[in-house]
Length: 415
Image 1 (cartoon, helix red, strand yellow):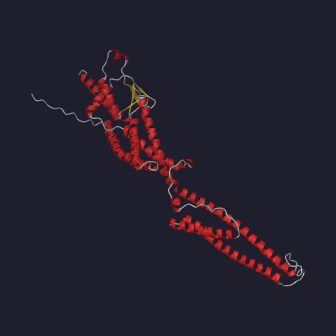
Image 2: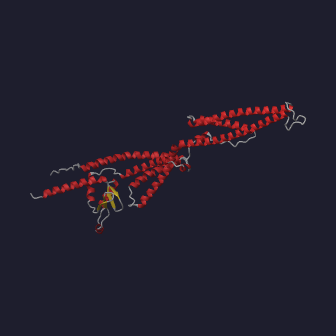
Image 3: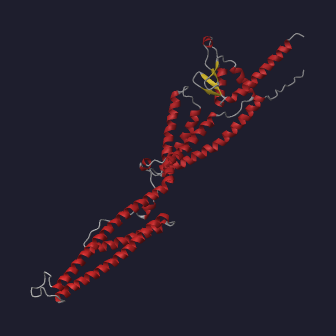
Protein backbone atom coordinates (compact mmCIF):
# COMPACT_ATOMS: atom_id res chain seq x y z
CA UNK A 1 0.00 0.00 0.00
CA UNK A 2 1.37 3.36 -0.99
CA UNK A 3 1.03 6.23 1.37
CA UNK A 4 0.87 9.60 -0.30
CA UNK A 5 2.24 12.54 1.67
CA UNK A 6 0.02 15.57 1.67
CA UNK A 7 1.73 18.92 1.81
CA UNK A 8 -0.21 21.79 3.24
CA UNK A 9 0.02 24.77 0.94
CA UNK A 10 0.87 28.03 2.62
CA UNK A 11 -2.11 30.39 2.91
CA UNK A 12 -2.24 33.07 0.24
CA UNK A 13 -5.12 35.19 1.51
CA UNK A 14 -5.15 38.97 1.70
CA UNK A 15 -5.20 38.91 5.50
CA UNK A 16 -2.07 36.80 5.62
CA UNK A 17 -0.35 39.06 3.11
CA UNK A 18 -1.22 42.13 5.15
CA UNK A 19 0.06 40.47 8.32
CA UNK A 20 3.31 39.41 6.65
CA UNK A 21 3.95 42.90 5.26
CA UNK A 22 3.04 44.52 8.57
CA UNK A 23 5.22 42.13 10.55
CA UNK A 24 8.14 42.68 8.17
CA UNK A 25 7.75 46.44 8.46
CA UNK A 26 7.50 46.26 12.24
CA UNK A 27 10.55 44.01 12.36
CA UNK A 28 12.59 46.47 10.28
CA UNK A 29 11.47 49.31 12.53
CA UNK A 30 12.53 47.34 15.59
CA UNK A 31 15.94 46.65 14.08
CA UNK A 32 16.39 50.35 13.22
CA UNK A 33 15.07 51.44 16.62
CA UNK A 34 17.79 49.59 18.53
CA UNK A 35 20.77 51.65 17.25
CA UNK A 36 18.74 54.84 17.60
CA UNK A 37 18.02 54.04 21.26
CA UNK A 38 21.70 53.28 21.83
CA UNK A 39 22.82 56.53 20.19
CA UNK A 40 20.31 58.57 22.18
CA UNK A 41 21.47 56.87 25.39
CA UNK A 42 25.09 57.68 24.55
CA UNK A 43 24.21 61.31 23.79
CA UNK A 44 22.22 61.67 26.99
CA UNK A 45 24.95 59.82 28.89
CA UNK A 46 27.61 62.24 27.65
CA UNK A 47 25.73 65.32 28.88
CA UNK A 48 24.87 63.57 32.17
CA UNK A 49 28.51 62.56 32.68
CA UNK A 50 29.66 66.11 31.88
CA UNK A 51 27.47 67.54 34.61
CA UNK A 52 28.28 64.81 37.15
CA UNK A 53 32.04 65.09 36.59
CA UNK A 54 32.00 68.62 38.07
CA UNK A 55 30.97 67.18 41.44
CA UNK A 56 32.59 63.77 41.77
CA UNK A 57 35.54 61.78 40.46
CA UNK A 58 35.43 61.07 36.73
CA UNK A 59 35.31 57.27 36.95
CA UNK A 60 32.55 57.33 39.57
CA UNK A 61 30.60 59.76 37.39
CA UNK A 62 31.01 57.35 34.46
CA UNK A 63 29.70 54.39 36.47
CA UNK A 64 26.70 56.37 37.72
CA UNK A 65 25.98 57.63 34.20
CA UNK A 66 25.97 54.10 32.79
CA UNK A 67 23.64 53.02 35.59
CA UNK A 68 21.27 55.94 34.98
CA UNK A 69 21.03 55.36 31.23
CA UNK A 70 20.62 51.60 31.72
CA UNK A 71 17.78 52.15 34.19
CA UNK A 72 16.04 54.51 31.75
CA UNK A 73 16.12 51.98 28.90
CA UNK A 74 15.31 48.92 31.06
CA UNK A 75 12.46 50.61 32.92
CA UNK A 76 11.01 51.93 29.65
CA UNK A 77 11.00 48.38 28.29
CA UNK A 78 9.46 47.12 31.55
CA UNK A 79 6.73 49.77 31.54
CA UNK A 80 5.66 48.70 28.06
CA UNK A 81 5.10 45.14 29.25
CA UNK A 82 3.22 46.00 32.44
CA UNK A 83 -0.37 47.21 32.78
CA UNK A 84 -0.88 49.12 36.00
CA UNK A 85 -4.12 47.29 36.79
CA UNK A 86 -2.45 43.92 36.31
CA UNK A 87 0.39 44.46 38.81
CA UNK A 88 0.19 47.84 40.54
CA UNK A 89 3.16 47.34 42.89
CA UNK A 90 5.54 46.32 40.13
CA UNK A 91 4.22 48.98 37.78
CA UNK A 92 4.66 51.88 40.21
CA UNK A 93 8.05 50.65 41.46
CA UNK A 94 9.34 50.54 37.88
CA UNK A 95 7.73 53.92 37.14
CA UNK A 96 9.32 55.46 40.26
CA UNK A 97 12.74 54.11 39.25
CA UNK A 98 12.28 55.54 35.77
CA UNK A 99 11.27 58.97 37.10
CA UNK A 100 14.25 59.12 39.48
CA UNK A 101 16.65 58.17 36.68
CA UNK A 102 15.07 60.75 34.37
CA UNK A 103 15.29 63.43 37.05
CA UNK A 104 19.01 62.73 37.55
CA UNK A 105 19.71 62.55 33.83
CA UNK A 106 17.82 65.73 32.91
CA UNK A 107 19.22 67.70 35.87
CA UNK A 108 22.87 67.02 35.05
CA UNK A 109 22.30 67.18 31.29
CA UNK A 110 20.64 70.58 31.75
CA UNK A 111 23.98 72.05 32.86
CA UNK A 112 25.70 71.15 29.56
CA UNK A 113 22.95 72.69 27.45
CA UNK A 114 22.77 75.67 29.83
CA UNK A 115 26.49 76.23 29.37
CA UNK A 116 26.15 76.11 25.59
CA UNK A 117 23.10 78.38 25.43
CA UNK A 118 24.26 80.86 28.08
CA UNK A 119 27.99 81.01 27.31
CA UNK A 120 27.71 84.19 25.26
CA UNK A 121 25.39 85.81 27.80
CA UNK A 122 27.79 84.98 30.63
CA UNK A 123 30.66 86.57 28.69
CA UNK A 124 28.54 89.68 28.10
CA UNK A 125 27.56 89.84 31.78
CA UNK A 126 31.20 89.67 32.87
CA UNK A 127 32.11 92.38 30.38
CA UNK A 128 29.21 94.54 31.59
CA UNK A 129 30.37 94.15 35.19
CA UNK A 130 33.82 95.41 34.17
CA UNK A 131 32.23 98.30 32.29
CA UNK A 132 30.21 99.30 35.35
CA UNK A 133 33.30 99.15 37.59
CA UNK A 134 35.41 101.16 35.13
CA UNK A 135 32.64 103.75 34.67
CA UNK A 136 32.31 104.18 38.43
CA UNK A 137 36.09 104.52 38.78
CA UNK A 138 36.30 107.10 35.97
CA UNK A 139 33.51 109.11 37.61
CA UNK A 140 35.58 109.22 40.80
CA UNK A 141 38.61 110.37 38.78
CA UNK A 142 36.49 113.09 37.19
CA UNK A 143 35.39 114.32 40.59
CA UNK A 144 39.00 114.30 41.79
CA UNK A 145 40.08 116.31 38.73
CA UNK A 146 37.40 118.91 39.44
CA UNK A 147 38.49 119.14 43.07
CA UNK A 148 42.19 119.50 42.21
CA UNK A 149 41.53 122.12 39.52
CA UNK A 150 39.34 124.07 41.91
CA UNK A 151 42.06 124.03 44.56
CA UNK A 152 44.65 125.13 42.00
CA UNK A 153 42.42 127.98 40.80
CA UNK A 154 41.86 129.12 44.38
CA UNK A 155 45.61 129.16 45.02
CA UNK A 156 46.27 131.04 41.76
CA UNK A 157 43.54 133.52 42.61
CA UNK A 158 45.01 134.12 46.05
CA UNK A 159 48.51 134.58 44.58
CA UNK A 160 47.20 137.11 42.03
CA UNK A 161 45.37 138.98 44.80
CA UNK A 162 48.54 139.03 46.91
CA UNK A 163 50.55 140.48 43.98
CA UNK A 164 47.99 143.23 43.46
CA UNK A 165 47.90 144.13 47.13
CA UNK A 166 51.69 144.20 47.27
CA UNK A 167 51.77 146.51 44.26
CA UNK A 168 49.20 148.86 45.87
CA UNK A 169 50.88 148.68 49.26
CA UNK A 170 47.82 147.26 50.99
CA UNK A 171 49.09 143.72 51.69
CA UNK A 172 48.55 142.91 55.39
CA UNK A 173 52.01 141.34 55.72
CA UNK A 174 53.85 144.50 54.58
CA UNK A 175 55.88 146.59 56.96
CA UNK A 176 54.11 149.79 57.96
CA UNK A 177 56.92 151.87 56.40
CA UNK A 178 56.01 150.42 52.95
CA UNK A 179 52.29 150.51 53.26
CA UNK A 180 50.27 152.62 50.83
CA UNK A 181 53.28 152.93 48.55
CA UNK A 182 52.40 151.98 45.02
CA UNK A 183 55.09 150.28 43.00
CA UNK A 184 57.17 147.19 42.43
CA UNK A 185 59.23 146.75 45.51
CA UNK A 186 60.87 143.66 47.04
CA UNK A 187 57.63 142.55 48.61
CA UNK A 188 55.83 142.76 45.28
CA UNK A 189 58.64 140.80 43.68
CA UNK A 190 58.28 138.06 46.28
CA UNK A 191 54.53 137.61 45.71
CA UNK A 192 55.03 138.01 41.98
CA UNK A 193 57.41 135.05 42.01
CA UNK A 194 54.87 133.03 43.99
CA UNK A 195 52.18 133.94 41.48
CA UNK A 196 54.37 132.89 38.55
CA UNK A 197 55.14 129.61 40.27
CA UNK A 198 51.43 128.97 40.75
CA UNK A 199 50.77 129.72 37.09
CA UNK A 200 53.53 127.36 36.08
CA UNK A 201 52.15 124.70 38.38
CA UNK A 202 48.72 125.10 36.81
CA UNK A 203 50.21 124.65 33.34
CA UNK A 204 51.98 121.51 34.49
CA UNK A 205 48.74 120.26 36.05
CA UNK A 206 46.83 120.91 32.82
CA UNK A 207 49.48 118.99 30.88
CA UNK A 208 49.19 116.09 33.32
CA UNK A 209 45.42 116.08 32.93
CA UNK A 210 45.81 116.06 29.15
CA UNK A 211 48.03 112.97 29.45
CA UNK A 212 45.54 111.45 31.86
CA UNK A 213 42.69 112.07 29.41
CA UNK A 214 44.71 110.42 26.65
CA UNK A 215 45.29 107.36 28.83
CA UNK A 216 41.61 107.27 29.81
CA UNK A 217 40.66 107.32 26.14
CA UNK A 218 43.05 104.41 25.53
CA UNK A 219 41.46 102.56 28.42
CA UNK A 220 37.96 103.10 27.04
CA UNK A 221 38.99 102.08 23.53
CA UNK A 222 40.66 98.89 24.79
CA UNK A 223 37.49 98.10 26.74
CA UNK A 224 35.45 98.51 23.56
CA UNK A 225 37.88 96.34 21.57
CA UNK A 226 37.57 93.61 24.19
CA UNK A 227 33.93 93.09 23.18
CA UNK A 228 34.75 92.24 19.55
CA UNK A 229 38.35 91.00 19.72
CA UNK A 230 39.22 87.64 18.15
CA UNK A 231 42.35 87.32 20.29
CA UNK A 232 40.71 87.81 23.67
CA UNK A 233 43.86 87.16 25.68
CA UNK A 234 45.90 89.94 23.97
CA UNK A 235 42.97 92.36 24.12
CA UNK A 236 42.34 91.69 27.80
CA UNK A 237 45.97 92.17 28.82
CA UNK A 238 46.11 95.41 26.78
CA UNK A 239 43.03 96.61 28.64
CA UNK A 240 44.54 95.75 32.02
CA UNK A 241 47.80 97.56 31.14
CA UNK A 242 45.88 100.71 30.19
CA UNK A 243 43.91 100.47 33.40
CA UNK A 244 47.09 100.17 35.48
CA UNK A 245 48.60 103.19 33.68
CA UNK A 246 45.56 105.32 34.54
CA UNK A 247 45.59 104.03 38.10
CA UNK A 248 49.28 104.90 38.68
CA UNK A 249 48.91 108.37 37.15
CA UNK A 250 45.82 109.34 39.13
CA UNK A 251 47.37 108.07 42.37
CA UNK A 252 50.40 110.32 41.84
CA UNK A 253 48.22 113.36 41.15
CA UNK A 254 46.05 112.67 44.17
CA UNK A 255 49.06 112.32 46.48
CA UNK A 256 50.67 115.53 45.15
CA UNK A 257 47.59 117.52 46.09
CA UNK A 258 46.88 115.71 49.33
CA UNK A 259 43.73 114.13 48.02
CA UNK A 260 42.55 110.55 48.49
CA UNK A 261 40.82 108.32 45.99
CA UNK A 262 38.82 105.24 46.91
CA UNK A 263 40.29 101.86 46.07
CA UNK A 264 40.15 100.99 42.37
CA UNK A 265 37.94 98.08 41.25
CA UNK A 266 39.46 94.63 41.53
CA UNK A 267 39.38 93.39 37.96
CA UNK A 268 39.09 89.73 37.04
CA UNK A 269 42.19 87.89 36.00
CA UNK A 270 42.27 86.60 32.44
CA UNK A 271 41.57 83.03 33.60
CA UNK A 272 38.61 84.24 35.63
CA UNK A 273 37.35 86.29 32.69
CA UNK A 274 37.35 83.35 30.24
CA UNK A 275 36.66 80.46 32.63
CA UNK A 276 33.78 78.11 31.94
CA UNK A 277 30.78 78.19 34.21
CA UNK A 278 30.42 75.57 36.91
CA UNK A 279 27.14 73.92 37.94
CA UNK A 280 25.45 75.69 40.82
CA UNK A 281 22.04 76.83 42.00
CA UNK A 282 22.57 80.06 40.05
CA UNK A 283 21.86 78.25 36.78
CA UNK A 284 18.42 77.29 38.10
CA UNK A 285 17.72 80.83 39.29
CA UNK A 286 18.39 82.13 35.79
CA UNK A 287 16.39 79.24 34.34
CA UNK A 288 16.82 78.62 30.61
CA UNK A 289 13.74 76.99 29.09
CA UNK A 290 15.61 76.22 25.88
CA UNK A 291 18.38 74.36 27.73
CA UNK A 292 15.85 72.41 29.78
CA UNK A 293 13.84 71.38 26.70
CA UNK A 294 17.02 70.20 24.95
CA UNK A 295 18.06 68.17 28.01
CA UNK A 296 14.60 66.64 28.46
CA UNK A 297 14.05 66.00 24.74
CA UNK A 298 16.91 63.49 24.45
CA UNK A 299 15.67 61.43 27.40
CA UNK A 300 12.07 61.72 26.21
CA UNK A 301 12.92 60.17 22.85
CA UNK A 302 15.00 57.48 24.58
CA UNK A 303 12.02 56.50 26.74
CA UNK A 304 9.57 56.70 23.84
CA UNK A 305 11.59 54.53 21.48
CA UNK A 306 12.46 52.04 24.22
CA UNK A 307 8.78 51.81 25.09
CA UNK A 308 7.80 51.27 21.48
CA UNK A 309 10.57 48.72 21.06
CA UNK A 310 8.91 46.46 23.65
CA UNK A 311 5.34 47.37 22.78
CA UNK A 312 5.47 46.26 19.13
CA UNK A 313 5.24 42.64 18.01
CA UNK A 314 8.61 40.97 17.44
CA UNK A 315 7.53 38.88 14.45
CA UNK A 316 4.79 36.89 12.72
CA UNK A 317 3.25 33.65 13.90
CA UNK A 318 3.95 30.39 12.12
CA UNK A 319 1.16 28.51 10.37
CA UNK A 320 0.97 25.99 13.24
CA UNK A 321 0.84 28.81 15.79
CA UNK A 322 -1.93 30.54 13.84
CA UNK A 323 -4.06 27.39 13.90
CA UNK A 324 -3.42 26.91 17.60
CA UNK A 325 -4.24 30.53 18.38
CA UNK A 326 -7.51 30.46 16.43
CA UNK A 327 -8.72 27.22 18.00
CA UNK A 328 -7.87 28.33 21.54
CA UNK A 329 -9.43 31.80 21.18
CA UNK A 330 -12.67 30.09 20.15
CA UNK A 331 -12.73 28.50 23.61
CA UNK A 332 -13.30 31.89 25.28
CA UNK A 333 -16.88 33.03 25.60
CA UNK A 334 -16.94 36.59 26.96
CA UNK A 335 -16.12 39.27 24.37
CA UNK A 336 -16.98 42.95 24.10
CA UNK A 337 -15.81 46.13 22.36
CA UNK A 338 -14.11 48.44 24.87
CA UNK A 339 -13.60 52.22 25.00
CA UNK A 340 -10.54 51.94 22.73
CA UNK A 341 -12.75 50.42 20.01
CA UNK A 342 -10.82 47.19 20.36
CA UNK A 343 -12.20 43.71 20.91
CA UNK A 344 -11.76 42.72 24.54
CA UNK A 345 -12.11 39.25 26.05
CA UNK A 346 -12.18 37.79 29.55
CA UNK A 347 -9.40 35.23 30.05
CA UNK A 348 -10.35 33.87 33.48
CA UNK A 349 -12.52 30.81 33.93
CA UNK A 350 -16.27 31.13 34.01
CA UNK A 351 -18.18 30.01 37.09
CA UNK A 352 -19.29 26.87 35.28
CA UNK A 353 -15.69 26.07 34.27
CA UNK A 354 -14.54 26.58 37.83
CA UNK A 355 -17.29 24.28 39.09
CA UNK A 356 -16.31 21.59 36.62
CA UNK A 357 -12.60 22.16 37.39
CA UNK A 358 -11.91 22.79 33.73
CA UNK A 359 -8.22 22.85 32.76
CA UNK A 360 -7.55 25.97 30.65
CA UNK A 361 -3.81 25.47 30.39
CA UNK A 362 -3.74 25.31 26.56
CA UNK A 363 -5.72 28.48 25.99
CA UNK A 364 -3.82 30.40 28.70
CA UNK A 365 -0.60 29.30 27.02
CA UNK A 366 -1.91 30.87 23.83
CA UNK A 367 -2.80 34.06 25.73
CA UNK A 368 0.74 34.22 27.08
CA UNK A 369 2.13 33.61 23.59
CA UNK A 370 0.06 36.39 22.08
CA UNK A 371 0.89 38.79 24.92
CA UNK A 372 4.62 38.16 24.50
CA UNK A 373 4.35 38.65 20.73
CA UNK A 374 2.32 41.83 21.06
CA UNK A 375 -0.86 40.49 19.45
CA UNK A 376 -2.75 40.97 22.74
CA UNK A 377 -2.56 43.75 25.32
CA UNK A 378 -3.27 43.10 28.97
CA UNK A 379 -5.91 45.35 30.52
CA UNK A 380 -6.04 43.82 33.99
CA UNK A 381 -5.73 40.40 35.63
CA UNK A 382 -8.87 39.07 33.93
CA UNK A 383 -9.17 40.89 30.56
CA UNK A 384 -7.04 41.45 27.47
CA UNK A 385 -7.68 43.36 24.24
CA UNK A 386 -6.81 42.56 20.65
CA UNK A 387 -3.92 44.44 19.02
CA UNK A 388 -4.57 45.73 15.45
CA UNK A 389 -2.19 43.20 13.87
CA UNK A 390 -4.20 40.16 15.04
CA UNK A 391 -7.46 41.10 13.24
CA UNK A 392 -6.26 40.09 9.72
CA UNK A 393 -5.22 36.68 11.08
CA UNK A 394 -8.56 36.02 12.75
CA UNK A 395 -10.47 37.37 9.75
CA UNK A 396 -8.60 35.02 7.40
CA UNK A 397 -9.17 32.05 9.70
CA UNK A 398 -12.88 32.89 9.97
CA UNK A 399 -13.07 33.14 6.19
CA UNK A 400 -11.49 29.70 5.82
CA UNK A 401 -13.88 28.31 8.42
CA UNK A 402 -16.91 29.74 6.65
CA UNK A 403 -15.66 28.38 3.34
CA UNK A 404 -15.27 24.91 4.87
CA UNK A 405 -18.81 25.05 6.26
CA UNK A 406 -20.19 26.02 2.85
CA UNK A 407 -18.32 23.16 1.16
CA UNK A 408 -19.56 20.69 3.78
CA UNK A 409 -23.17 21.81 3.27
CA UNK A 410 -22.82 21.56 -0.47
CA UNK A 411 -21.36 18.08 -0.18
CA UNK A 412 -24.16 16.92 2.11
CA UNK A 413 -26.97 18.24 -0.07
CA UNK A 414 -29.04 15.39 -1.74
CA UNK A 415 -28.41 15.01 -5.43
